[in-house]
Length: 97
Image (cartoon, rainbow, N blue to C red; front, side, top):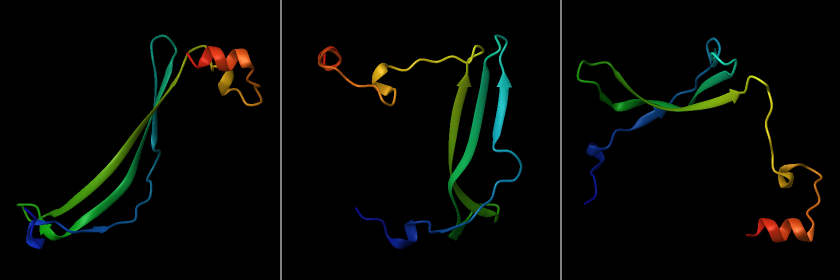
């Protein structure tokens, strides 16, 4: 069952710019900082369809990224993730299990 062209809504892609800050920060009770960054991936306005009230119909694809910064600002990485770390036979053997 293929859709006819009249069953599809066509969109014109729109350019956009950020107004104000795209990141909001929250400080938690324990001192941890949570940053929430919101972005638009793609936005378009329908060219062959309007909302029932006559207003323009938009399709907006968004992204939300969370950054958690612990109160003590510490984190860990495995040795294999550290640049310049040489893997030994023992490391390879242990990590393969």
